[in-house]
Length: 271
Image (tube, rainbow, N blue to C red):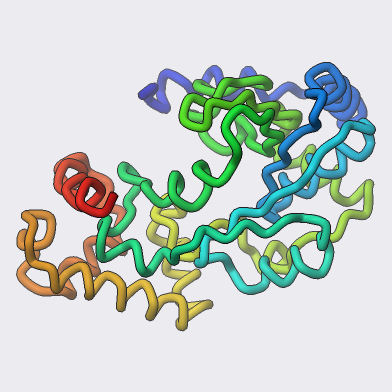
C-alpha cells in the first residue's frame, strides 16, 4: 500500500487546474469513448459525486442504468433524497443487515472493511462496465492506485471514472451551474454521506454522526455487545469489559494491524 508521503504528489498532479467547462468536455468525451454496447452500470450513492456523474452521462447521451446498494446504515435523509429525486435508481438490497453480520464477522475497522465487499462490491455484476464517481481528491491512496479507467480485480469489471481529476470546487460548481438537487445534509456541514459510523470517517466525524442518529448508534452498540458475548477470540478477550471494546472501536486506535489478524478470525468464521 502506498504511503501518503509517497502518493501525495501524484494526488496533486491529478487535480488539474482546468476550468469547469474543459473538465466537462473531457468527462463527456471519456464517457463516449468507453461506452459499452450494453450501457454503463452506474454506481449511485446519492452523494454529490454520484449526482454529478449521473448528469454527465445524460449530457453525454450514453446509455446507463443506475443502481444504489442499500447498506442498512445509510443516513435517513440520504435515503429520502434518493427516493424523492432519483426514483429511476434501482435499490439493491443485500439480503442481510450490517448489525446481523457484526456478531459473525467482527466490527469493521479502517484496515478490515469486510462491509464494503458485502454491502457494495459484491452487488455489482461481474464483467459490467462500472460508472463510478470516485475522485483522486478524496484520498492520496485513491490518487495513487486508481485512474480515469481502471480494472477492478474484485468485481472483475472495468471502471470508468469521469470526474476522477475533478476537485471539490469543480463538483460543487457543476452542481450549482446545472441546478442539481442535493441531499440537505451537505448544508448542515456534513462533508461525507457514507454509512453512519463508518470507521473511515474518523473519530470526530463519527462522534457527530452518532449524536445525530442515536437510534442507529444504539444498533451499532447492540451488535457490538453480541460480538462481545461470544468471548471466543483474542480479539475479544483482550478487553476486560465490553465498554473497553466499544471505546476502542470508537477511537482512531481501532486501525492498528495488531487487531487486523484477530479480526480475520471472525471474517473466516462468518463466511
